Image (cartoon, rainbow over all chains, first blue to last red; front, side, top):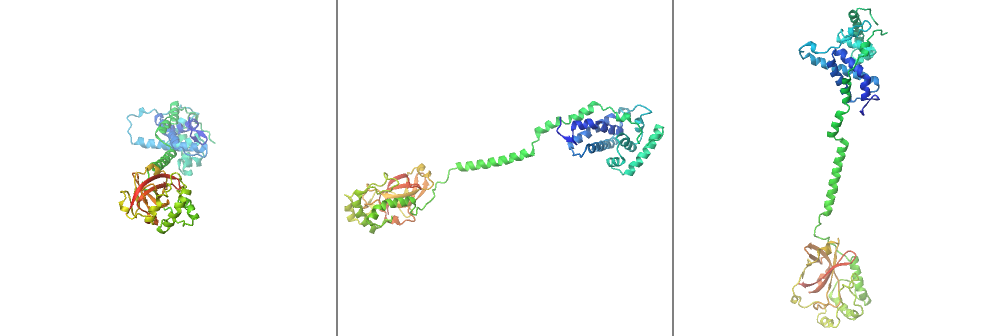
Length: 162
Length: 262
């Protein structure tokens, strides 16, 4: 299909491999499907248009997450200037209430905690990597993780997790 | 130690429409862009090709443009053609102890006429070897001695009585009706003139050759210039054969013209 190569992956292979990661970042951040889809498309459009050189697939993944976060931030800044007619027009994301799955509780957190916890627990990034992706200090990331866990515990009502 | 279960996020279902839209970026715009964009390399190559084509066209046009009408002026300075002529014509003279100078002087003329009257019947081919058949005809010795006795210098006493013709001046003789094709084909044209013995009696008994320059002025007109040659002083009003030769001494055109010396 395409002749562009991204870290030994074609464009189609890159989409299939990282579509879940990019979609999760967008949904966790925006919490609705319509906006998440826009950011999802914009993220891969930038990948195709810019065609940056990646040293490895990990580099590609981090780049996609960073771009997806930027796209979400841009959309959020834009949405602040808009006045929605009704809140119910947006199809919000929802997860089943399950004692074993605390994804729904993650959505209750503030954005700054949510994205750190998501990258740490879902994407399995280290603190240093999260700090690099989010362009924050490592200690800041650690503080956000600690406070996020406490808030998550309060929301979930269970015991604290490491 | 990460014990938190985020299975619903990790197993998030991505709608197919999301992926299809993202994949459509890879094919559709590319074909449209190929229509309107032209690679820089080929664009520069096209510029270079146009430049070369213009240069080639200009060179081709330059070669097709006709040159000027003026032929290059060449002073034969006893060139190969002239050397051949003088050698052949003076072979007999040297045998008779006559000077080999091609110029025609009255003092030499007396000796030459005497010798020629004897040699004319023996060796009539005293014309240039480049074209023996076209060379001046041998003189008639029966009629010459009378004139020589009266005009030892070979010049008529009153040249102005002869019919009108082109005048020999210091700038030369203007000869008309020379075919352009005959002279323009040669890059360098030489000329020599020989008195025509069958013409009006001039007192000459030998076919003396006078080298000259040729200036082609177009429209079939040629100026035969004697600039640089003293032989013009020895010319008399008479019929002359004008021989135009190329570098190799081959006669490319000849014309018999009566010229008047003033």
